[in-house]
Image (cartoon, rainbow, N blue to C red; front, side, top):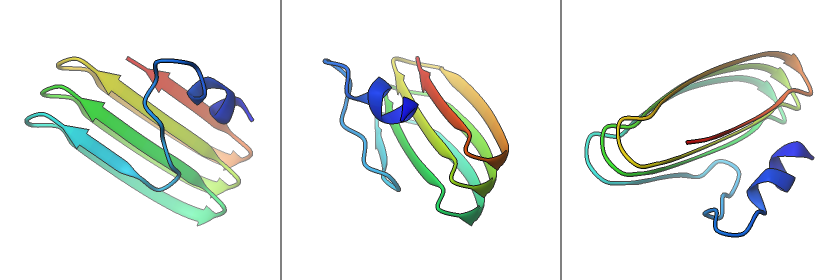
Amino acid sequence: GLVASALSAPGLPALTPGRLFQEGLANTVRAEVYGDDNRFAFHQHGNGNLTESVVMGSGNQLAVIQIGNDNIATVAQYGSGNSAVILQ
């Protein structure tokens, strides 16, 4: 799908569904996931990055990659079959 295609691009860190990777200081991930068969992964490399997400439904995909400092990503997915990729 869209998420897999975007994340297979050369030079991007490998993401595994359900995996959270943080390297640096003061990085924060807040995730609320409700429903079935939802896939998500987060990668933060740098300092002061923030990701807030809500996923409600089924068959949704979310991937967030933040490289650098002081990035903010806020995502809300409601329903079924949604895909979102954020690269900062």
